[in-house]
Image 1 (cartoon, rainbow, N blue to C red):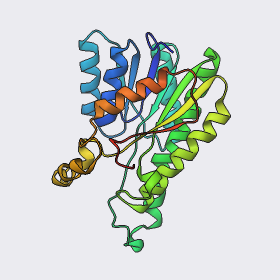
Image 2 (image 1 turned 60 degrees about the vertical axis):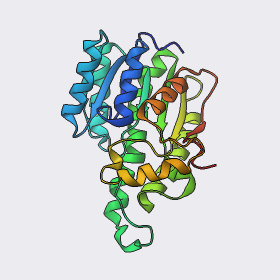
Image 3 (image 1 turned 45 degrees about the vertical axis):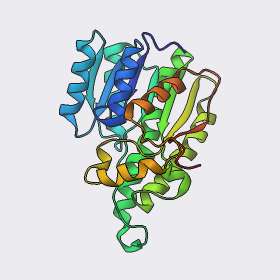
Length: 246
């Protein structure tokens, strides 16, 4: 799929992988809706960068864990740009909890992570699917994590929520075929603000990876765009991790 003049919605688009994806999509000629929940200034800065380079972008606020807000966001984007062709389900949250501290993995932690990381991705996919079906084509990329493959990560509930994202990808691919392709990009360690306060740990990890480098947000964004463009692929869980899980 040629991304020129396509309309893309990127959740959590103001920072990290989300911002890099917004910029990469804009460079490919797509109009971009930059979703945010709390990072308003960062989302507006992303829009400013894109518009300043001759692209088309808007910032739109919605908490992806709230279905009503997600549906309203989809309508705003479609009203502004005419339709929605592409969705990047990037918005995710975590809690840092030691794995052996089972008592700290309380019910409210599970609910919070599942509401955003899993249900939020489903709500967004459902909200945009009607526009994509009208066009007889569309593409969705969910952001998974190697935590969902290895069982390791920032917390046990986070790892399980990302495993659920991988399963959601396959189920949505079946539910939305043949008009809408759904794939999942699975990053390993990426140099984003998630490492804030643990930068030394990130630097120490790099030499132990096969490629001896931590992925950048731009690395992941390039592959997200490739997955959106590839018309012969759906339901796939694709790892981009510098060999971290090999």
